Length: 108
Image (tube, rainbow, N blue to C red; front, side, top):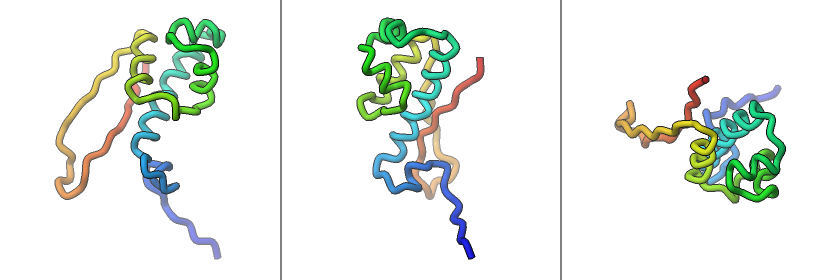
C-alpha cells in the first residue's frame, strides 16, 4: 500500500529547505521575468542589455539558478521590463500563526 502525504503550498518547505519562503518568492519573481522575456523574443545578449547583467547571469536566470539573485534584484528586473511591483503589508488572517510572503502576478 502506498502512502500519499499532502504537501504544503511551498515545495521548498516540503523538501526541508531552511530558506523555503525566500526560494519560493524568488522562483515566482523569476517566473514572471522569464514569461515577459519570452513574450519579447529577445536573444540572451539583448536581455542582458535590458536587465543590465552579463549573458552568463541571463542564462542562470532563464534556468532558474537563482542563488546569485536577491529578491530585490529580481524585482528590479521586473521594473526594467516596464512592470510595477507593489509590496503590501497586512495582518495575517490567523493571529495564532506567523505571516507569509506571496507573489501574485496580475495578467496583462
